[in-house]
Length: 160
Image 1 (cartoon, rainbow, N blue to C red):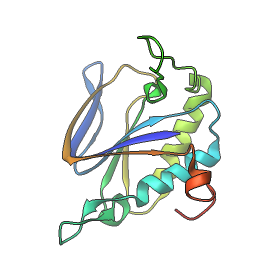
Image 2 (spheres, rainbow, N blue to C red):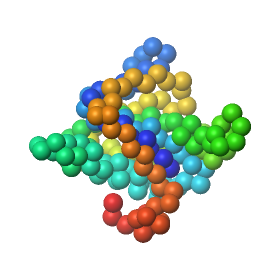
Image 3 (cartoon, rainbow, N blue to C red):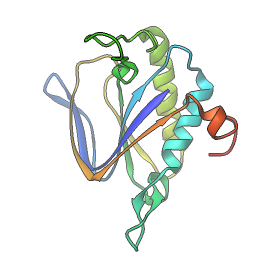
Image 4 (cartoon, one colour):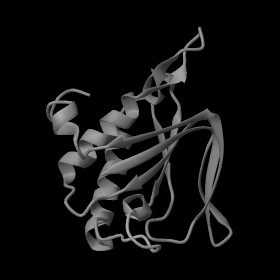
């Protein structure tokens, strides 16, 4: 599972000209689901996103998380995060989960985020053509992913 996080001063998602999700200061989360992902990865990544320290403290250091700051998340599904463009000119999306498998995991990730204290969550519409507007604050953009975390963090069960 991959989450491309952008710290924003504001962001919104529209579908067919109608705003479906909008936040002020917080994180825009573009979420890609891998074909092998499970509920376990959704829960782990939600905790990681909530605890990642990318907001400035009183001294201007990136020392606060979205959860500590009482900020917002705008979560948008984006299967193209698993686009592989190493060969040819048309990316392959074979590593992305098919929609019937990805939707429950996307919903699970969103629900895990909603259950964490101090966070307000808005979303896009799964599998819709969306227009995403944002003002990247910093700019700060971070990629979080579950692949390889067993080598980096020890285990997905480990406290984030």
